[in-house]
Length: 169
Length: 428
Image (cartoon, rainbow over all chains, first blue to last red; front, side, top):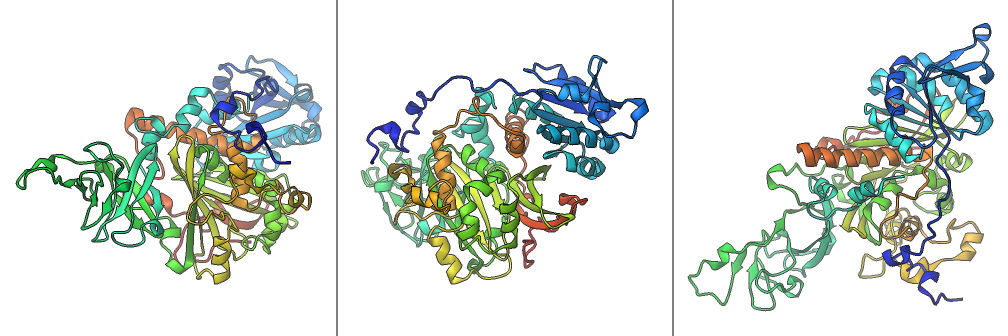
């Protein structure tokens, strides 16, 4: 069957035809969790958290419950929010669909591992942003690589906001 | 997702726009050298960055790119005569040289100096490799000529084509740094295309449809790397360099030539896709060149005598549902070039990025947009020269490499992603 109307063929890509695209909102913003893996990253996360976000939750540190220090279960990982309050990782991951880990050094390797494993288990997309000169953050890159589906190494702190905005966090 | 004003900033490249000024800092392809094959050959209309120009090659072999319209009555010089070291308007015989300088106004007295006061806007047009490059910015800031490897290898080692794409440059370019579509849209090509098939790397590509990505800054732009599982204890990395504003290389496969693209805005709704293949150390075989001319690899098969692909929006891209069912063409469109072009044109002339839903695998695109915007604003507000202008930034290569899992792709592939004359590409 040969197409006879403009909208039934590939020529329907004009600016005029664009007006007929359905304009109903498709999804809400992502349920993003942003976690700083070290002190340097926490400074950045505090700054970024002050901007307007649709549903993102920001955490400036990762702790483990003292009695289970070497246990890698996500139930034992505690996240520190920007206001100082604490909550368990598994609670924060309920309903989340994006985990962004921020690092400036390799201090957070264990935390990245625990968070990455928990996200893999729950099918949550992971991304890692490493701030600094590449030759100075090689340890952080190696630590995060197994646990983040996407890694970006950047000198530009503004990339954190750019990525979160682009992903509708 | 982008705000509307940022989408407009990135997609508008006419004069006096921030992104237009950014493009005007670089040497960019204006046309193929084959379009002006000999002295005094017919002139060619060239629209570039929303400016209408005419390109010609005079009796002495000099190239010129000047305003398309005669200063006298606004007639197109395409109707003119390219003769005796100048382009003569067909209406009243005004004549211009390759710098746009009017050198003859026949109606004026013999000893009149009127024509010395008439000069059309002109841009330099220089042949480097198989391409005629132009620079449309401030003459005082004109950079050194391009040093991309594909235009500096011997002619028998390289082949360049071009095709018209009916969409804004940005959505076309973004496909060049989006590795994750390859395993789907081009899966047929990985198995069948003569310029792709047979490489060990293809097996990794097809076996792992969920690659991990790493994005790293480069002096001239970015490296976007996709990693997939290889044998135990190792990853298969495909590293795509982007040099600002719109030059990308496709990671190689086996001993096949390296492919790449340069996207050049015609206006805000159209762009040229310059497509090339080159091999750093050997001549392309006759079979390879024929395959490129036939529209295999990343080239298109064009309507004879034009640079419009045979698969275009007027014929629904010759959609072949049977080939789609047989898995020969994932989208039903033939050829890798127009598999990309058809989908990118289907987005509309300028895709509405306020409505898109990006995922983290798109982080290379996110970073590239940010770099472009930042560079355009830094140029506008502070006059800062953007990355990619320095010819040293052009000396990059794509690479495909298997590395131990614990190793950093950028550290271990530093030599692989540097263009080194006479050195074979790093490929799997």
